[in-house]
Length: 231
Image (cartoon, rainbow, N blue to C red; front, side, top):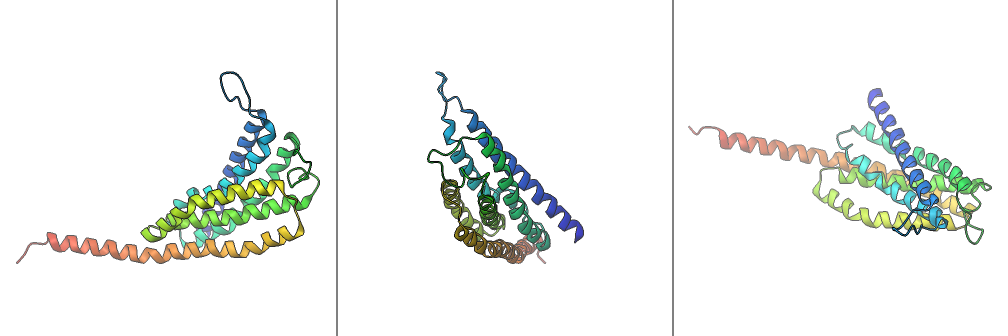
């Protein structure tokens, strides 16, 4: 069990690190002003903060891809991953945005979470909580898609695109809005719910496993019966 927990913890650290590095790389690329065409016209770097936050939202749901391959992990390992990946990703991204703000442009209207990020700790905590909660949803989708159950995988797969759109738009909205204690309380209130959803997805994945095993055994038995010589 300790080995399973250790592997799950290491995987959670790796996923959080990859997501943090990926969204940071994209932000820095946008912040340099991308060349758009052969006439050397460049993208306005004022859009880098919005692009970076949209990437954060998409990344939290895209973590589903990292969880699809965990369908054979034990329940203990899966739950450990579900409990660790969200907070590690939230803390990592919230801290990574601090240097973003140092090198990035101020918002046009001089307000919003992005503009006050270096001066208002509430914004840092709020972003960490929101990313944590959204990552839990992404992990739940990943567990469901990788469950092997046609109904569960199909339902989660259909929910993936809307979840990406909502997360991307929500992150864009977050970087423009003023962080408030009410928003933080709402974010904190969402954590138990999204953690329960992630744990529930693990339970559904495991509940589908016996039926898959039963169908596999039935197929083997039918094959043996068909192949046995008649007397």
